[in-house]
Image (cartoon, rainbow, N blue to C red):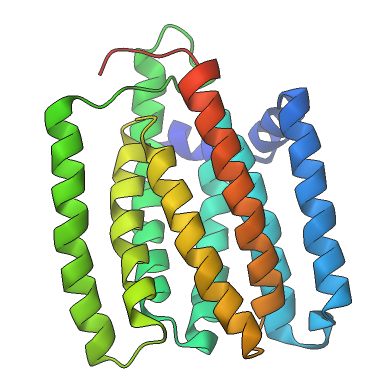
Length: 245
């Protein structure tokens, strides 16, 4: 257990994994960081605490995504701190579905540390997690699970008078299924994440239109996450070595 924590949160492990990123990944990471900081400066969100939390969470998010793209267990260290910051931001914007989503992320990302560590130990090489392919019955279970979870979350969002309930209610179901696929190392997670990114992009665009707190930085982040999702799908479907489920 302690070994898994050290692999994930150790500063040496994080620096090593960041330095070992593929050239294309490093380039994309650099572009992402420049866009985030530029939007943060132009939008003048540096005048508020929530703005600083937003840009910090955005930076953590893109680093988390880049490490996940390459199957590095250290992605969870950045993802856990990202979720903590997003909980504060979502509370300010009254996004009930997003709050539930990030609470779920905290639990599953913590579990992911130990799950990925075990999977890595079972592989012939233990630096990068190798993707798996879903079986037909697993794919059916994913679709049915998404439908049922959406109906449940929609009901709760309506009860608590959330914002943009029909769109917002999709985020938690997609997150639940996406994280479960991620924990198992299934490449189909990226189809779920891309769908999540598109929905979240629409939500934050609407929040930006009414000038909600930190909406400019969050909108920029969602655009970045969509492109990163496409890049992650490319790597897991075509670049990373596939192993049997």
